[in-house]
Image 1 (cartoon, one colour):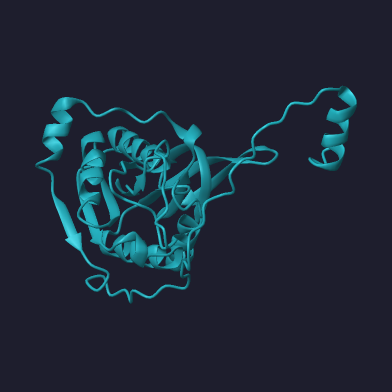
Image 2: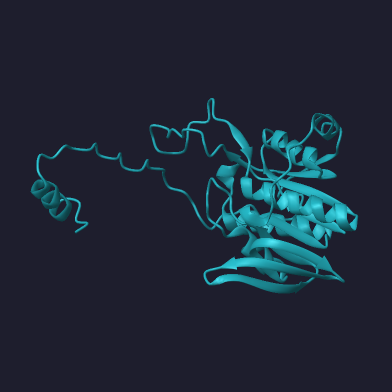
Length: 249
C-alpha cells in the first residue's frame, strides 16, 4: 500500500506572533516553526497503515528550503521519502495548494492520500476537500478512525450528532482529526536515518501547475486589545454595567 501524506510547516501555535508595521505579514525573525499538528495525526495514521499492510508512506510539503527541516521530522517518524514543492506561503492560497497536491498525487499514484484536516496557521479547512474535487476521488473529512480492508477504507468521522462511518473505494482522500491517534515521537536513530532519506524537490512548473491564486491577502490586522477590568462598589453598579456596557443581561 502506498500512501501520500502532507507534512506542512506552520508557525508554532504557542509562539507570540508579531505583525509587521505596515500590516503586510508577520515578523519571522526568531519565530519558531513546527509540523502542523493535524498533519502529525495524518502521518501517524499513514505509518501505522503501512506497518499493518506493507508499502510506503511518502510525505509531501509545500514550502521553501526551511520547510525541508520539518519534512525531515516526517521522515524520522517513519515516512520512506519526501517531496518538497518549492514555493513560499505568500504565493499560495487553498486553491493553488490543492492543485499542486493533486498533481503530486497523479505523479505518485498512491492508494490513499491523507491530509491534516486544516493547518493551524491559516485554519481554512479547505485543501483536503479541494484536492478530492480536483482529482474526482471519494473523500472523508475529520477522520477519528481509519480501517483498510479488501481495497476499501472505512472511515469513522465526527459529526454534530455523534459519529458517522463511511465506506470509500480506493484511491481516496481522507483528512485527519486530532482524535484519530497519538503521533509518535521520533527516536534518535530514526532522526539520524531521516537525514539520509530521499527528498525530491519540485516546482509548480515541474508539475505543470500555473501558479495563479484566487485569493489575495491585502493586509493583516491584530485583534483588538482586551480592555482592563474595573472595580465596582455595589451589586447595583455591577448589574448596571453588565446591562448597559457589557450588554450580557
